[in-house]
Length: 298
Picture (cartoon, rainbow, N blue to C red):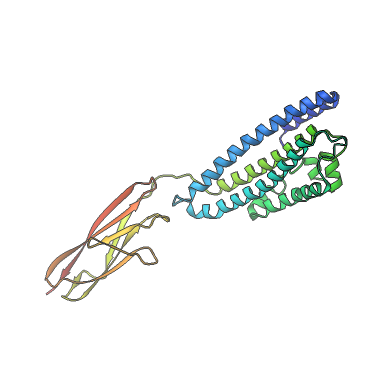
């Protein structure tokens, strides 16, 4: 939490302390509405980042790194969604039972489950990757900086944040919205980190060149001519199509085509047409052509 956020929170707390109960509830309503709006804004940002990571798997120069970091980002999303939804369900329980006289809206089992899952959430997020751990181990706030930095107890957590007889329903709902806000902020920080690990910057261009070689330039009638053809700089995602003698040939493991043919029975120079079709980074189809020349000696 930055200094500005701390100042704003301190002001709000000061106002709440000095207010009467009905005035406090109005302030909690406003604070909760602001937190829920913030959650929506952060979620929209997270969705844009997930879309960026998803799209990077279809670019040849980001595919390899994206195949590593996109699954990690989605794992963080899954962990965050599960805890966020648990908090949302508790919020609904409180909203339905606001007339309960002793303000114990949530049973002890759900209180316990929430405490355990909040503690587990940080460990699960940090375990996604060692770089995530070293970057965020000291920068993740689940509840508040002061509470997270001390020795935590379940009783202390409930007393400090949520389930006590002295807190109103609106106070508890606001606390839950703040926990949800923390989760969204953590998710945003980690998935932004994952996205940054897959650089989408592209300087210059890819220069494509058809490569074609033959085992010999001079043959006798009936000798074997072996041609190796492929595309230098071809996409890691889209396999180029190679045509030799106007027929598409299947590539071998190193992504080039090895084609063997019998030399013509006629003496003199002969030509073998080669064509490669491939998809460029902008999605357009390009074609390169070349001829292999060989001579049949007498």
